[in-house]
Image 1 (spheres, helix red, strand yellow):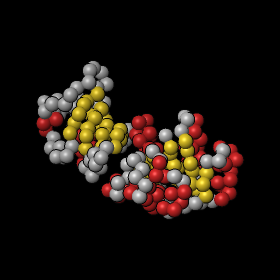
Image 2 (cartoon, helix red, strand yellow; image 1 turned 135 degrees about the vertical axis):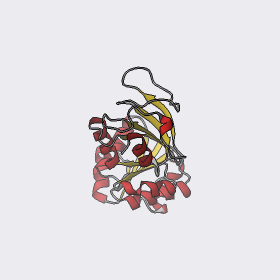
Image 3 (cartoon, helix red, strand yellow; image 1 turned 90 degrees about the horizontal axis):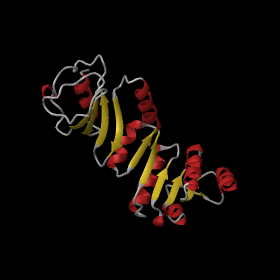
Image 4 (tube, one colour; image 1 turned 30 degrees about the vertical axis):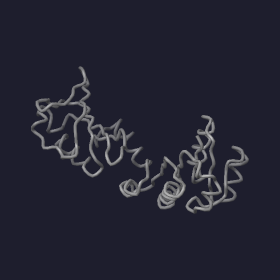
Length: 218
C-alpha cells in the first residue's frame, strides 16, 4: 500500500519505519526542514517538506493514489484538516487521525474521519485491564457505533440480577457474555449476571457510559 504520514515527529518516524519494514510505500510530510533531513538520512528519501493541511502539498505527495493517510502531528486541528482534505479532495479511502484531546473524538467522527486514535484512551484502557475501576473497554469502533466490553466487578449492585431487570438504552444491544468459569453465554432476558462477567455490547459513543452505569449499577 501507499501510505502518506502527516507529521515527522517521534510517532510519525517510528510509524513510518515500521510500515517500511512491512513492505509498504511510505511518504512523510513534515513542516520542519531539519526533521525532514534527519528522516531522509536515516530512512531514505521518504520525507517531503511541507504543510500536510495544504492541498498543494498533498498533491505534490501524490495523495490521489494513496491507499491511506495517517495524520499524527501534535495538533488535533491539523490532523483533522489533513484527513478531511485528503478524503474529500483526493478521495483517499482510509484516514486515521491521532488525537491529543479525547474529547475531540466525537467531532472527528462526525466530520468523516475513519479512525481516531487517542493515546489517552489507549493508556486508560490498558490501566483498566490491570485495575478495572472503570469497567469499560473499547474493542472496535464502527460507523456511528462501538463494540465495548463491560466487566462486572465484585461490588456491582447488579450481580445476581437478570438482564430483564434493566432498562437498556434503545441503541444498545448485549451480544455475548464471557464467563470466568464455564461457557460463553448469549444474553437472554432471564440471564443472571455474575461477578467477573465480561459483557460484549454494541452501543454508541453517546450512550456507552449510560450502559456501563446500568450494568455495573453505579
